[in-house]
Length: 176
Image 1 (cartoon, rainbow, N blue to C red):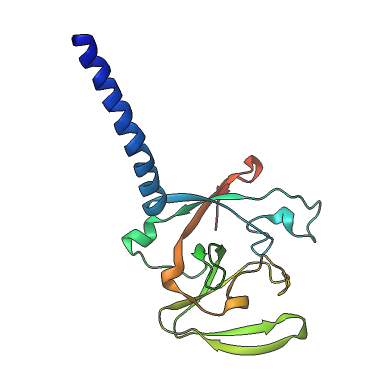
Image 2: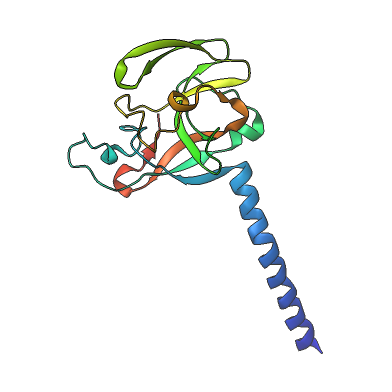
C-alpha cells in the first residue's frame, strides 16, 4: 500500500511538472525575456555584421539575441536609440528588429531609395520610428522591414529591447 501511494505521488508530480513546465516557460517568454534570431543585414554592423555583402568576408551566420520584455510589462519608458523588437505592422507573424530613432510629434527626414528624394514624415501620437543601422540597405531588400518601408510603427507593437547577443560565441556581448 505504501508503494502504491509513492508511485501515485510520483505520477502526480510528473503530471504537474508536465503541465506547469510549459506554462512557466511561456509566461517567462511573454513577460521576462525571449530569444530571437536576427534576419537580414538591416541592423549591420550592430547585428549580423557578416550578412552585409559589403563586409569583409561575408558569412551566413545570423546573430541570436536576448530580448528584455520586462520593459513592456513594467511600462518603462523607451529611450531613443534602443534596439527593439516589434511585430511587423504589415507582415503578419514577422518581427522587426530595429533602432528606435524618433517619437510621436517629431519629424523624420526620409530618403527614398536610389532617387535620393527626401520627404518629411510626422510621427503621429502613440507611434515611433524604427530604422535599421545599415543605411546602405536597399529598399527592395526583402528583409528590410522597418519604418523606411512601413512608416511610423504603433508603440503597442514594440515587444521589448534587445539586451545582448548570445550566438555566435565570437559575438557574445551587450547591444548598445
